[in-house]
Image (cartoon, rainbow, N blue to C red; front, side, top):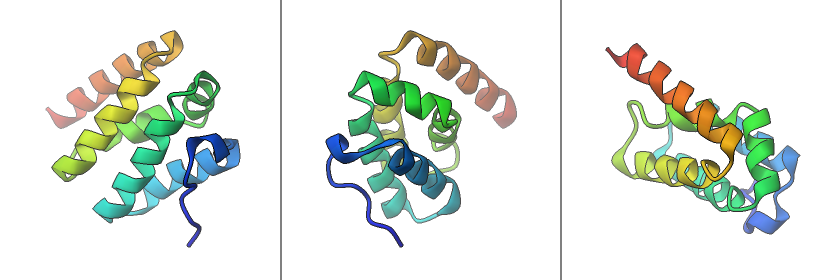
Length: 105
């Protein structure tokens, strides 16, 4: 298993893609939390906000709000909060959350 990058400065598009894939592939809440923390920290940089959106990360992170441990939900909300500093991401997050709400009803 690959290591999660220690610093958001060292995270490139390939590493972000691996983190998003890791979120989809694991049910381990500790791994999910660590991946979400790294994505959240990475999302503090505007260039990474676009990359995460373009890699489909918004819907994956939003999906963590459903059926996950409270600590994972908290980390997902933190990541979405950082990602929402980008106007395009705001629109996509709204759509993603509405779709998730409709699926849970």
